[in-house]
Amino acid sequence: MSNTGWIGALAELQQKGEPCVLVTIIEERGSTPRNAGSKMIVTRERIFETIGGGHLEYKAMELAREMLENRSQETRLERFSLGASLGQCCGGATVLLFEPMGQPQATIAVFGAGHVGRALVPLLASLPCKVRWIDSRENEFPEQVPAGVEKVINDEVVDEVDAMPSGSYFIVMTHNHPLDLELTAAILKRNDFAYYGLIGSRTKRVKFEHRLRERGFQAEVIQRMRCPMGLPEVKGKLPIEIAVSIAGEVIATYNAHFGAETRKGETVTKLLPASRRG
Image: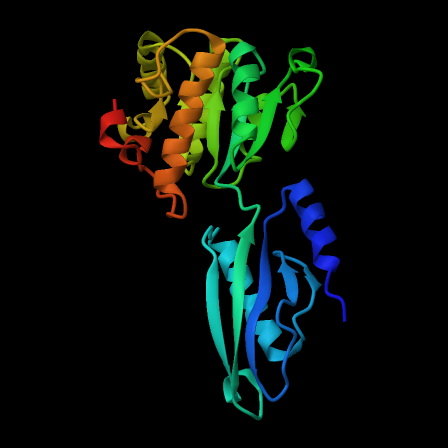
């Protein structure tokens, strides 16, 4: 029997950016052999195709969803012994390969569709990241938004902070300082982000720190804000140079941080290599 429906399902899921795990029978030994090479796809809510049903398939689905919950990026080989543990009457074993697909390393909100935003978002879109690009000015967005990027137009852009899941990355580079301050306050109030970067100079940071302290924010919370953001080793003032610097810091952060629990009060500087702290 043909087991090829997974191909179209996988293509559809990748188009949508929906994470899944591809499960493949590598080897089977037992009295009721399954077809080696049979595959099924497991998402958080659905299953496509089958590896033969029964308790083995149920256990494979459980493990695949555990991998999705933990955002696992590593392929796994698992040997399932047939017998009482899998509801089988006879002995044997099945080896399954679990391959995570489409799991984003970071979920990122980019506030601002100005020059640096237009240079940065295509870079982020080329990474294993899920990007929401947010601005109140529709005419600031380019005609073609990079594939996989969600364009969000909202007059009340600060409301979009609460729409992001815990552990998100926030990048703020809007067209005015008062809006930057309101976004900063909303993001720091959550204090459950993996990264928060604010475009600007050290002078801007000092002014923001003063205003945030006046609003009652504690120093350890304010310290989590990256401003200036980006890798200091990447010099230059051109939008693309700034964008490369920011993208590099995002990569350094998710490489160090991915899969770890987001703890309130943890500073992003702890997650960056020592040479990049500042």
